[in-house]
Length: 184
Image (cartoon, rainbow, N blue to C red; front, side, top):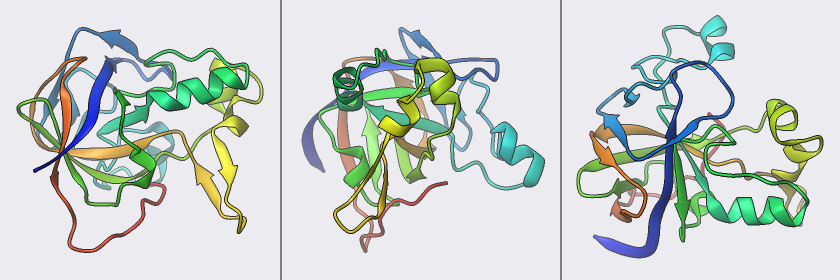
């Protein structure tokens, strides 16, 4: 297993369908479901807009991860963001989540194993909760004009377990071929 200087900075969950999540001392990941007690926990889609379109689709958004480095970037743009404020369950530090491939498996602490499924597509609720212009600050363009979504990544839970701030993030399995993350 490869090691990065990566760790979980904070964890959060929210029982109700609200934009922000409440920071917690720990969260419990449930295999095939997501974060215990979170509104997005379940084997099929839980995101409200997706429920209306495809209620029986598999839940590829069981766990939402955001890199704390984005908070620093947003602060430089004038937005104060704290863990859970962007709706994430896990705030990471020291790992470039956006550069990881689809199918990458990460171990969070001793027991929990997740598999990255895709990117979070930023929505206008970011402006409503963080401030006007915040959503635009979570987007960028490459030199070739391709859109870069910086609002975090989504994952499914392969092995459950407790996750606390301070636990290490370890690469468990690399996919056989690199496939960039796409919005899910």
